Length: 327
Ligand SMILES: Cc1ncc(COP(=O)(O)O)c(C=O)c1O
Image (cartoon, rainbow, N blue to C red; front, side):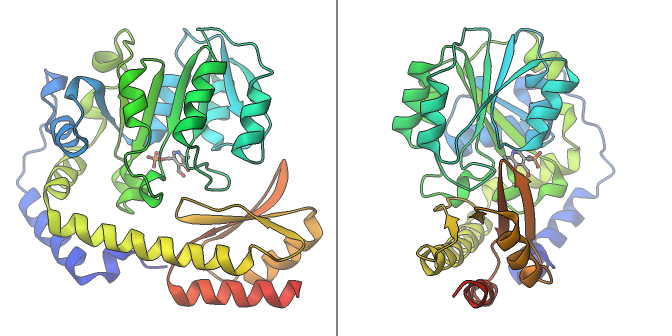
């Protein structure tokens, strides 16, 4: 599957021009003053948050590795279906992991209430959720902070496909128990550039200077996103692309939501998941879709198929094939 960066003429031209500008033989990138990192400043302007609260890193993956592994956490609390790097990092660091069940966000919150927590715990959730694209509301996040006593990571890798791109930044700025992870991987469909950022007012000893030094991001990626965040034409091209993806995602949701035998939760992400009661129907539908790009099946807690949204023709094809199997 070719990417938007290859298909969109404006982006292709911009990237080529940018590449030329960036090939200048200056590979030095070793900032003595991390807060002077130009990408920290560019993100600070872009999201209108003080640079003191912003950290850049090599994608959310680096933040997961750095933060989940910190020695100060007693328990790592995770939804029982979550982006697998959280669990892997916790186990690698010999952490005690507590799993919370919940196919939807309300069920998750009800189960979280039953867990006794302390200020030494770390709870990690994605919103929109990695598993089904469901987004937690502000009311729900406030509720979580009420019933849970520890630090909360909200992984907003997919937030730009929701109807609230500001996500939980305001809650994060008013509560130092909250850490937000953001990524340019999904926002600009550029995961290969390995760039993301973290927002928190929490003070973690040595975090900026020793754990997440700015030189974890390559100078090429730094320059690339600094230019991109300043370029309104390119930003608009991405807004339009994301709107298009959102429409094609909702087309699938609206066409399949009333079908028997499958469960589909409204997604606020660039994918949509279909949940099944058993493996048999899942495998049958997966087999009928597996020649298409961007189809994944999982059997974690519930069997589900994740569909990465593409163009309208793709959505129509998905709808047609699934209806053929079910009706
Ligand atoms: C919920 C979630 N968080 C983080 C990541 C990784 O993001 P990055 O490319 O910024 O490391 C992914 C990638 O699939 C993801 O689904």
